[in-house]
Length: 379
Image 1 (spheres, rainbow, N blue to C red):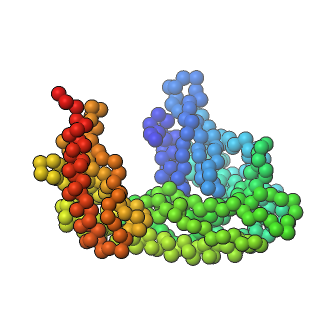
Image 2 (cartoon, rainbow, N blue to C red):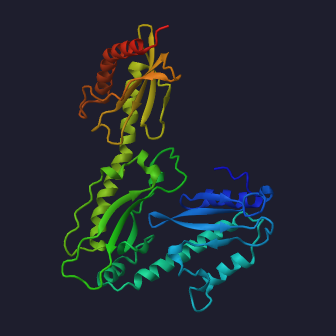
Image 3 (cartoon, helix red, strand yellow):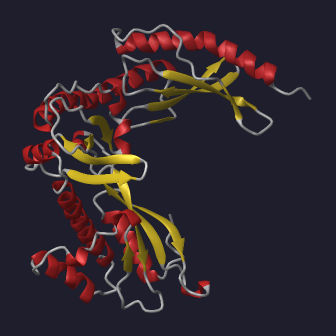
């Protein structure tokens, strides 16, 4: 989104925050607090990633008094979160926090980032303290077994119509996936998490129900690896996270390494197809998931769009044909539906896969040409 309607100093703060925050942060509900719009926009809502969800904080500047730091309003569910009064004694962290506010310099574009990061760290400590106070023996035991793991976030939630539960976000695998992908376009580190949700019980049951488990990942990772294709190991009776996680991480690590190796296999397949169809007009150079070729059948010229899944070669590519000569009444080039019903075997060599697709296109291009001609309006 553009921040041009903000006063320059607020715009600079937001640009630096968006570009340097460790995770993807969002800005919503942009407003002006002045009686007229002349002063520009000066308040907005930040959606800050936390525990595989977002916490929403309203940030309120006063464009007419830029020397003052912004006010931060936390969500209604966090009315007990008081970051300025979290410890009885003033420690190094408290002095740092107070200095951010007392030495506020609106000309320094890093100040909003420093403020939000410090508040998020304190929010994490606040949620950890709340979870630790829950009267549940199993949760107490779980926390004691995983407290040494870095990056775990936890949150307690409840509502009028749902029971109290504790949610953990556990980062998996100590590996830098970004560095494994040559030419990686990702701005933020790509991670995989296990979401673990425990219902809160007052006493430790003899056979407690297993927690709800769900794998989640950063959005951009889907170009390389789909967590929807991962089958989670079973949670055995009496198991705890410290026992469950090593087996899951070992399996995931193998699958991610295999997913990276499949990039070269897809690249080799596209290169094999290029020997028959010619150099692609465009292709995905990093993940090798897409390519477009220019083809012809007699005088009929068309494009072949190739869509390759992360499950290639187990799953065959989908093809879409697009005419270069036939336009719909809405001005859109005529296209075929996705085509994936053609001879295929994941055991074939890349050259044989390419030959089978080429043979299929020879026949299908005639059907597509007929479809385009028959659906073309008569003048």
